[in-house]
Length: 151
Image (cartoon, rainbow, N blue to C red):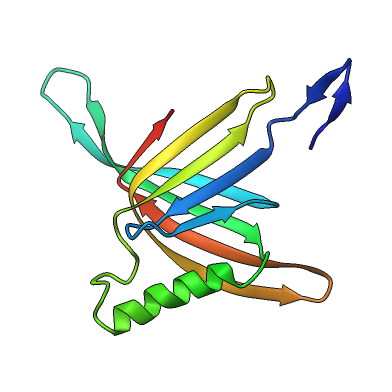
């Protein structure tokens, strides 16, 4: 969503692009109408000592993510079909290319770009094609990242 306002670029902070990198170096650039959801996973540990207030701690356990996007061609299906075929051929032990990376680039309101990186990524295409004559074809990619950092 760009336009001009007082001779500067107007941005409401909704421009997002995603790059997935598989362990074998295959790169998938996801652009266009995309929705990114990150969810931190944590184990809750509660300590209830006698005569003291209860304390709770959260132990990091990785991050789940979901990418919902408009289909822009056959490349996403081709990549995930290759991963699935590799699994059935014994090439990928977990069927999801564990060990990849995800980069999420968000254009902020002030014009800067925030980069978030997830490492040791495993992923799969949860919804390959939801088709309708009245709307864009949607795809959903879900995955897990061991760590997430903002760069």
